[in-house]
Image (tube, rainbow, N blue to C red):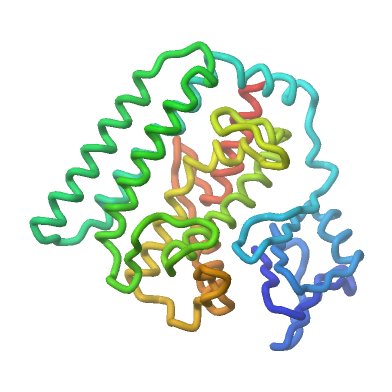
Length: 323
């Protein structure tokens, strides 16, 4: 279970070895054995006993911004690492093996994008069909360019890879726009702040995914601040930005599916500070949908696990490789 506290004035405490959640809707208690993570939004009160209960049971506790991005977290000391992993992680970043790794990550991302477009593509008119086919051809071309890159270190080709990946992603979102109901269509991909409902949903979903991937890396003993392709930046977990590329498609799928079902009403969004923000009801719908999707069991590389566990498996596989 993923416990989410996003109601202003809610509180989390401990009683008789259980978590107690109080909000304007009432009171509920939860066994720590049933909880895998706790996400805490602004305006929530938490007791130190509740934090210690989470630490004892190795429950990841994340403090979120209003966009769903992790601002901080508390985790168990038993997540520990060994120095060998962190030393080898630094060496890996400057190796030819890292070039192969990031090429595979980006190739998988573009493969995922093509598959999603094909999976959602309805019966289109000739004009939109030609536009979709043009995007698919562009993605295939950029996949080939990425896989044909040759270098001894990622630094030599990182600007080129980022350029191709960015160009391909812009084309991908132009195709996604054609698949959405008119009220969710958008001019371009916008981040903080989003300029439309679709991008506000996508931004919040990506924030949730960033948090889950950062937690998986920490549990595996990896340093999330030592990245491969994304530029080093002060206080930025750049390895998360590398690893997330394999999994972004899961958030894309959930958001597109909800928009096509017209699951959100006008009250789910707020126009504030020059942007469109996801609000209370919209957050609840999106959070529940994403968590249900990540809990669904799928088979990847011969292993049948929930999507959330597949993220942890990938982090452990990477850490084992570095050992």
